[in-house]
Amino acid sequence: MCGIIGYCGDKAARPILLDGLKRLEYRGYDSAGLAVADQGKLAVVRAVGKVSDLEKKGIARPLPGHFGIAHTRWATHGRPSEENAHPHCDCRMEIAIVHNGIIENYLDLKEELLAKGHAFRSETDSEVIAHLIEESYDGDLEKAMLRAVQRLEGTFGIAAIHAGSDRQVVIVRRGSPIIIGIGNNEFFAASDAGALLPYTQKVISLNDDEMAVLHPAGYHIKNLNNEFLQKEIEIRETRDDLADKKGYEHFMLKEIFEQPEAIENAFRGRLIENEGVSKLGGLEPVLERLKNVKKLVIVSCGTSYYAGLCGRYIFESLSELHVEVDVASEFRYRKLKMDANTAVLALSQSGETADTIAAIREAKRKGALILGVVNVVGSAIAQITDAGVYNHAGPEYGVASTKIYTSQLVVLTLMALLIGRYQGLSFTEGSALIQAIKKLPRQVKKILTDIEHIKKIAQEYAQYKDFLFIGRQLNYPTAMEGALKLKEISYIHAEGYPAGEMKHGPISLIDENFPTVAVVSQDSTFDKMLSNIQEIKARNGRVLAVASEGSSRIADACDDVIWVPETLPLLQPVLNIVPLQLFAYFIARSKGCDIDKPRNLAKAVTVE
Ligand code: F6R
Image (cartoon, rainbow, N blue to C red; front, side):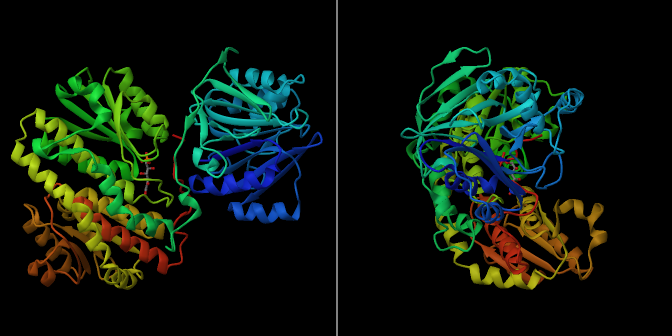
C-alpha cells in the first residue's frame, strides 16, 4: 500500500530515494516524503500529492547526505497532509522513521508517551514508533529499535535512521514486507524489489520478526530475540518495465494489450496435450492430497474475487469439488467446517493483500490445505501457502487490474482441469478444453483490433452518470468486474448484477439516463438474457451488449453491440472482459481521469 525505500552508501541519497519512490508510487500515492542525514543533522521534506510534488519541493531545498529513508503514503490514520506524511521524527528531530502497516495499540502508546512529555506532530499511528525509539535510544539505534518494536502490536515494515549514526539504516518486519538490496559498498531497503531495479537484483527478504542493520561497510540480520541470522541472497530477475510505457499513453492500456502474451505465459509448458490434462509444477508437492480434496473454498478480494466467482463455475463444471467463494475480509466471520479434505485457494495478484493473508491464517488454523494463485514471485502469500501456481503475467503497474485478471482465469481453468481429470473428466473433454485455451491469445488479439469501434462507443456513453452491468452464470462475475473497472478509473457509478436479479429491484432505476451493459454468450443463458434486455428496452433504457459474434437477435434487441469471438462457455469470460476493460479505459480517458493512479486506490492493499 505505502512504499518504503532506504539507502546508505557513497552516493548522494536523495536522487536514489526519489527514483525509488517513483517506482513505488503505484502502490499508494496521496503524499510522500524523505529524510536524509548529513553531518549529524536530519533534513526532512514532505509533500501532499504525487512524488513529483515532493521532487519540486526538494529542489527548492537541496538535501546533501549519503543515507536516508523515504516513503509514499496511502492514508489510513489521518487525512493526507504534510504533517501526516512520513518520515516521522522524534522530539529532537534526530530520529526519522517510515512505516508500512498499522500499529493497533498506538492510542495507548501515544497516551503513555504524551504523559512522558513527548510532543506529537501528526495524527498517524506511525509517529509513536519514532518516539518509542527516542525513549530507548542511548547511542545505539539497533538496540533502541529492538526495544521499541517489543511494544508494538499490529503489522509493520519499518526503516529508521538516526542523524548521529553515520550512514546506518535499521529495518524491521512484522507482516509488512521489507527487503535488503545489496550493492557495491552500498545497501538499500525497500518494501518492494521493484524500487531497486536500476541498482541491484541481489536481495534478501526479511521474514516476520526479523530486523537488519545496513551500513556501507556491511550488514547483519537478527531476530527479535537479538540472535544473529544467516540468510540466502536471492537474485530477482525483473525487467525494468516501469521506465517504459512502450508508446502507450497509460500502463493500463499497455497491460490490456499485453493480455495475449500474459494468457500464453499462464499456460505455456503447462498443457499435456496427449493426455488431455494440465501439469502444474507448483502443485506437485501436494498432488496426492489434492486428488482427495472434496471441498474448495476460494478467498480473494476485488478483481481477484470476481476471478474466484468465475472459478466456482469452472471447478464445478470440470471437477466433483464442492466449491465456495468468499470475499477474504468476510471469511473469518463464517463458521465453515474444514478438515484435511478441504482446500482453501487464495487468489491474489500482489500476493500482499492483508485481508487475503488474514483469511489464509484462519484457514490454516482450521487445518485446510492452503493453495495460492499469485503473480508476484516470493510475495507474502506465496510464502505462506502450502503450494501454488504463479501467473507469470509480468508486472502490472496500472492500479486497475487487467492482464492479471484474465491470467487468473486461465490458471484457474488449468487447476480445475488437473483436479477434474482425477475426478471423472474425460480425455475428450480435457482435450477440447486444451485446444480452446490455446486459441485464446489469438482471439484476444482479434478483440484488440476492434479498438476504434470500442473507443467510439465509449465516447458516446461517457455522458452517463450511472450504469448497470448484467450477465448470467459466468457472465455474472464478468458484469461485476466490468462495473468495477468503470467505477474505479472513471468514478462513474456502476452496479454489476446477475441479470435475473434485475427484476427484484434494480429495474426501478432504469430510464433513458441509466444505460445497461449486457454481457451475453451463445450458451444456455442466451434466451433469458434476451428477455432481460427486452425488459430494459421496454423501460426506455439504452443497452450496450458485449456478445458472441454474429447473433442477429442481439443486434436487433440492443442499441449498440461489441462483438467478441466465441469460445467454450467456461473460457468466454477471458474474452468478454477485454472490451469492458477498454470501454472503462476510454470513458475514463475522455473524462481526463488519472487512469493509472485512480484516486483513493492503491495497487497492493496491505491493511485490513
Ligand atoms: C481492481 C483491483 C483490486 C484487487 C484487490 C485484490 O482493479 O485490482 O480490486 O483485485 O485489491 O488485490 P490482490 O489481487 O493483489 O489480492
